Length: 212
Image (cartoon, rainbow, N blue to C red; front, side):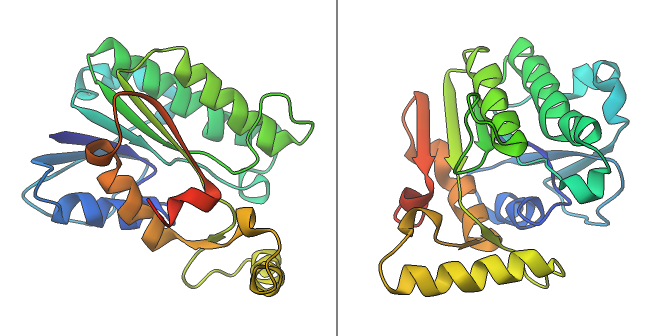
């Protein structure tokens, strides 16, 4: 199976790339990045591209399964408009090109509270992305909806506080849906998903991912 990956330099994507390279079920891995990862492996093909001109690279977006874990924070993006471009526009266009080119499966990293009806910008954006990709009718569409993610070496103060608070609440049996999940474990689950899940659309909620 040939895997395609966007978001390979992110906190989840970098672990997923390692999983895909090491997994014998994947014969090749093509990644699309703004800057080189510096990785080298016989199975790996790296495409450094301009994500504002995806159509120029459409002939490269061919394979069996697309893993979509591209995303950023509002702080890093600088504005909601720029975050929308990264978290919605790019994954949606990439998915559309992949479907047009015959890619049969897509695995998406979304968010536990994603909903197109949400009044929260981030949750609404992720929910609309889920729906946009659903409309493309991939033969196999797998949505992961993790809660807070544990990122090794994170410097996000707010993230550290949230993880500590949730850890305490989980310990007394509360908010199990929002149990923090390490990006490394999430990557392991993502890599195995195309083999373990059926055809059609599957959704893995935050409290189901660890047991998957």
